[in-house]
Image (tube, rainbow, N blue to C red; front, side, top):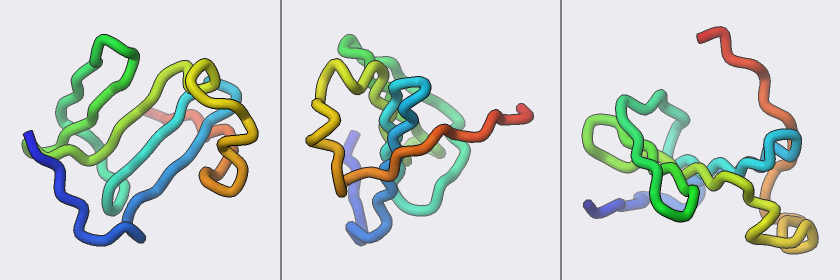
Length: 82
């Protein structure tokens, strides 16, 4: 499957420190209708067959806090009602 990003400004990166998860969304944030967990704890999120985002579990084990500075927004996410 191929992912095309029309505009790099449409990439949103968020790190949830309390859950140690990095979220990367392509385009406007949309609810996925399918997802795939890879062997290295990365979740690829799909909507209508297109990749809409990537979720990296246990992100701090992969990157140092310093490497996050100025790159991602760091905040806990609100609990979902669904």
